[in-house]
Length: 248
Image (cartoon, rainbow, N blue to C red; front, side):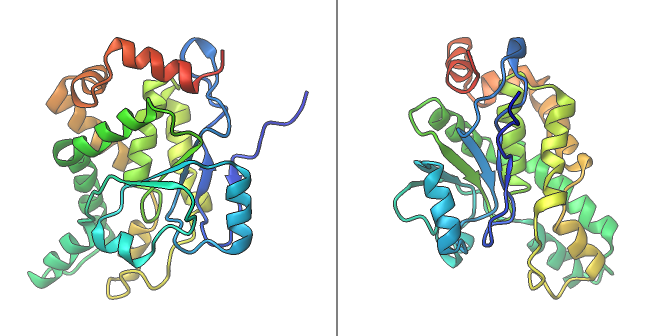
């Protein structure tokens, strides 16, 4: 029996580039390899990285970064179609606001702000995730989904995709937490914040994703309702998504 394809690509300029393929989905059908990738931003990829990514046949990138983030590091693969689905970052600004109010920031503050940002993915940014799913139903693959670090906006988006395709919860959590193994945090990012706060901002934990799904439960009743009413995945669209991204 041959080994499965590589999931994580050890790129010099993008540390968190991973394949979502291989996970068991609905009726035991596995996600197709080399169709959906997730990553941190592609603005610092090297020529060697670009050769690897071209070899994957990438056609599209879906970029959740805000305006300034995107302008600071434009996609290094000029030949692929880049679709902007902007969700402006709020975490650092919220922490700076607490500092300005005289708070002594701790890791607990950072955890609180991170969880709140995930709740707002549901309450303020569902339209961006709905747009992503509309694109996923089109002929856009192989494709990559990313933000700046490829861990929060991207992490929630990929968790939704895996849920929609019937991947078990424990495997979705495992994929989400792989960021802590692979992502190389920029040591200069938010350098005016305490080290323990920056450590939280450069990692993921299960409670972040749980906060988003708690918001889904509170606002939509359950995840199935959110997939249908929030993201527009009616039964026909769900079947098309499964046909496109699950093995026969």
